[in-house]
Image 1 (tube, rainbow, N blue to C red):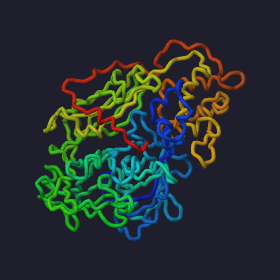
Image 2: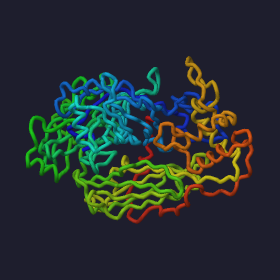
Image 3: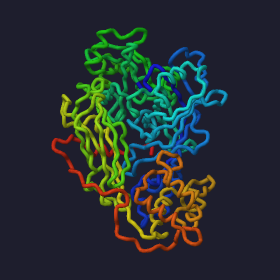
Image 4: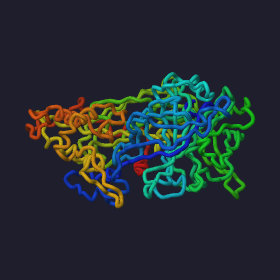
Length: 607
């Protein structure tokens, strides 16, 4: 059941995403033509936040409601949600300047802390990217009006004594040992003024059960039908989640990232009467979503039907036909379809959907197929691979998908990186998309399922070059690019892009030999940290294995003065450093699913 469970807690507060925007423009990656003006705020320069560090923080987050057991005097109601008390802040990064639609959080620790400051529980957030980025959820230009959700699991969960919290005690008992499920929605992100870089967060923590996906609900997925409701752009990329709790004869519905939000109050706007119904038209209950504090306390999750349980007839109808949310807008008399499942009930989604690969290296995940919320075995999935960024004539990574799903509806996907032949010159590698279809689809087996939101993004790096004994001139182009793109932590001294604010000083100036040499031991330590660690270097997680090996070779191979060499020996012929270069895949398989690549390149915000 994941976070969408009768035992859960909701929280609300603020977050800060201190992103750098210098790297949003691919031309800024060109070392030879980089202009210092690119580090200044403004259009066609460093945009609105050139001084970003990549830090992502939780702020002022409090538990707003608990569900499960006797909630009236639960000590969790006075608890706060905090990040780690003894580690650096988490980091949020884009996959690539050409794919800013899967921004990912690394290195986050989540704690539930009681009123006395005691950690009731804490766990590490498994790195995850946002999903269902949608525009115009509330008023405001750009990212201020957008929202998205992050869903993942907390791992290595440590519990203190939670017997005074009925909710947490039941959650601990219901969940897998060492894991919990978490989902949070971010919106209201500010790109100017005193709150630049801050936004709102509303979330849910619940049990993590054996065999369920980490990044989405194995349940019912109702895509918003934008035509005839509130406009094509308003609800693009939004879907409601629904879970059938057959044991309790209830439905849990999550519309947190679907309903419109009033910017002034922060609560859901009155869009009209919303009813959940089964495919046979039987009404299963109305969503009572309006009211002061409703969004913060509910996170948009509701239990239906209210005051009764589902009948045998209703349970049978739900299991064999699509669910639908209907809307009667204010002043109207006739309902319109607001959100609905596919008529054939199929849903297919990869467990993990963001990958960074060196040539010849492989990554694996599962494609999980369900029908009307139940795992669908013996399905026949197909994959289509395409270059996501231009130029798009690069060799394709190899994608192998199991011929059939197993009894749990899972088909393993293996993605192997290739040498993309440096198509973008001064930007490392190439970005690819992978979409999926099912032969069993009753509508059209060649049409991808949820293609415009539901696809894998892969960054495949270029191979590196080997150097017999590298010097500063060999590694400086790598360091300089980070100094250019992230001037506050890694650029020149006295960086002051905003008038009226004091200058900041870099942690290390990556474009200066002496600064880098004096910092060499700490750089080596950061380069060797796992990608999940908040201190991993680079923050952006976009350094190829080949370049990382070159930097480490230079940093470790010190001269008589104890510093890395200023002058190295000539480089040898270019060769792949990580793995053997894989053979290019066929560009499009016979009967490959159809996909509108232009819409997949939709440029989102929050990056």
